[in-house]
Image (cartoon, rainbow, N blue to C red):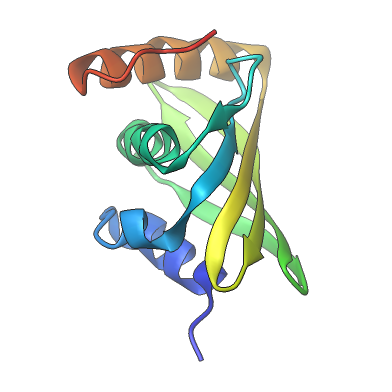
Length: 131
């Protein structure tokens, strides 16, 4: 049986977000590493996660996975403009859908790069960057 975690990981591995909308709960909450307020709802969560898929593509791979019931923590690495990025996705699922998605990123240079690139992607997609 394929879980929501499996589906998310597969999307990131292949660089496609086909099926992402259906994977997100209508009331999904997304916590960005660069925005201090939670982004609530499927449309804004979808916009952020789709943009993240574009931004975090160079060499993206998960290095560690911890799943306990409906909670999953997935450590990842990638490279952005020569900066090695290390981060963690913390995902909660309920009834087979993602209801909460929090991203944490390090080091500071990486956070600044993520902010810059995410803002550009969201502006291109017409989704406002809520701060």
